[in-house]
Amino acid sequence: MKKLRVFPSIRFKFILFFVLLILIAMELIGVYFVRELENKLTVNFKDSILSRINFLSYNIEQELVKDREDELDSLKVDIRKILNENTSSDINEIRVVDKNLRVIGTSDNNNQEIVGQRTTDVLVTRTLVTEERIDQLVLDPNNGRTWQLYVPVKVGNQTEAIIYLEGKIENVFDQIKVINGILVSGTAIALAITAILAVFVAQTITRPIAEMRKQAQAMSKGNFSRKVKVYSNDEIGQLALSFNHLTRKLQDEQAKTESEKRKLSSILAYMTDGVISTDRKGKIILINEAAEKMLNVTRETVISMPIVTLLGLEEKYTFDNLLEQKDSIILDYSTRNKPFILRANFSIIQKETGFMNGLIVVLHDITEQEKIEMERREFVANVSHELRTPLTTMRSYIEALSEGAWKDTEIAPKFLMVTQNETERMIRLVNDLLQLSRMDSQDYRMDKDWVNFQSFFNRIIDRFEMTKAETIKFVRRFPKKEIYVEVDKDKITQVLDNIIHNALKYSPPNGQVTFKIMMYHEYIEVLISDQGVGIPKDQLGKIFERFYRIDKARSRQFGGTGLGLAIAKEMIRAHGGDIWATSIEGKGTTIHFTLPYERIQEDDFS
Ligand code: ATP
Ligand code: MG
Image (tube, rainbow, N blue to C red; front, side, top):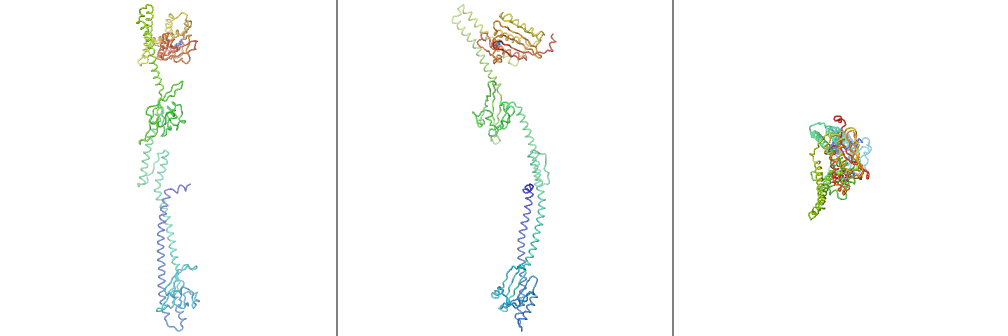
C-alpha cells in the first residue's frame, strides 16, 4: 500500500531523474575513457616490445654474421645470453628459429630441450616465406591473452632467422580491469551521494507542495482554517502565498454564498406563494413548503419528477411549451366540495451566456380572488334581475292603465295598488342594498349603547304580537337574571325584525314561535324557533348569502328580496358575534345568533 503512494510521488521522480542522469553521464564517460585507455595502453605495450625486438634483432643479426669454428654450439650459447639479457616481466618467452626451422634459442629456462629441434609453427614458415612481420592476439587458457610476434632477422637481403616473441598483454587488460573497478565504485559512490542530495532538494520542493495538497484536500471538505507555511521567497514560496490568499478569498466567497443561500431558503420557506424550480430537462430540483401544501405533496416524492406531471399538465403542455409560456396558466384543482384555483407564472433561469438553465414556477392561490369575482358577477346579475322584475310588472300595469284602464273605476285602483306595492318593494330593495354597501365600506360606524337585553327583546316581540295572526303562539324563555350587552339598538332591532318576520312568514297557521336567550361565560345566544317548513340541510349556510332564497316564487310572494339574513349576518359580525341556522325539514327552523357579553360588568348596572 505504502509503495503505491511512494512511486508516483514527485520526490521519487526527482530522485530517479538525478540518479539516472548521473548513471548515464558516468556510463558515457566510462565507455569513452576505458576505450581510449585500452587503445593507449595496448599501443604502448606493443611499442615497447617492438623497440626491444629491434634491438634484439640487431644483436642476433650480429651473432649470425660472426665467423665461428664450431658454428652451432657457440651460436646457441651467445643467443641464449642475448635472450636472457633481454627478457622482462611482460614477456613470456622469446625464441629464435633459423632459416631451416631449427630452434636455436629460447628464453624459457624450463624449456631448453626444444633447442635444436625443428619447429612446426606454421606462422614461422609463413614469416620466412613472406619476410614480413606477423603478429596475433591469442587466448591462452593458462596465461590469458598473449600477443605473439614473428619478426624476420635479415642479413643483407636474406632472412637468416625468425624471432618469435610471446608478450603478456593480459597485464594491460588487468590494469584496465582495475581502472574499471575504480570507475564503477566511483559511480556507485556518486550515485549514493546524488540520491541523498536529491532527497534533500526534493524535500525542499515537495514539502510546501505536499502541504498545499493537504490544504486543498481540507478545503474540499469545507475546512478553510488551515494555512500553508511559507518556507522561502522563491516561486514555490510565492505559490504558497498566493495559495493562502486564494484560501482567504474562497472562504469569504463561501461565507457569502452560504448567507445568500440561507437568506434565499428562508425567503422561500416563509413565502406564501409556492415556488418550484426545475433543471434544464424540466425535472424538479426545489420545491418550497407553500408549494408542497398547495399541491398536497411531499418534497421527497416530487424531487426529479417532471414539472408537467406534477402540475397535471401533460395532456396540454410539454416542458418546451412552458418555457415559451409568457402568460400565466390557471390551474383548477377544485373538487365538488372545495374550490381551489392556482395561478402559475413561469420564468426561465438563464446563465450569462443566455443558456437556459431551468425553469421557476411561482404558484399563487387565487381561489379567494376568483370566489369574490364570482360573487360580484352573481351580485350584479341578481340586482339587475331583482330590479327588472318589479319594473316589468309596473310597465305592463301602467301600459294597461294608459290604454284606457284608468277609466275603469274598478280595475284602476287595483292596478295603481300593484304599482305602488312594486315601487315600495323596489325602494325596500334599494334601501337594503344601500345598507349593505354602507356596511361593506370601511367608514361604517356603529352607535353602541348598554341595554338590558330582556326588556329590549320584549319590546320588539310585543310589537309583533299586535300584528301577528291570532292563531300563532309566541313563547318567551328568558333567564331571570338581567343581561346587559353593548349593542347598536337600531341594527339589532333590524336583525330581530327580519328573523321574526321570516319565522312568521314560514310558520303554519297555528304554529308556535319560541324566543330563547342562553347565557354563556363570554357571550349570550339568542334563539328564534318556528314550526314551519324548515330548510334543507345543504342550504342551511346559503340562506345568509345575498339574494339567496330557497323557493324564489314563494318568497317573492311574501315580498322578500333575499337580503334580510345577509344584512343580519353583516350586523351580527360587526358586533363580534356569529349567526347560523339549524333546521329539521318539515318540523321547523331555529335561527341562532350570539353577542359578546361580559359577566363581571353586569354589577355596574344592577
Ligand atoms: P327579505 O328578508 O329581504 O324580505 P327574505 O325573507 O326572502 O327577504 P331572507 O330573510 O334573507 O330573505 O331569507 C332568505 C331565505 O331563507 C328565505 O327566502 C327563505 O327561503 C329562507 N328562510 C329564512 N328564514 C326561514 C324560516 N324561518 N323557515 C324557512 N325558511 C326560511
Ligand atoms: Mg326575511
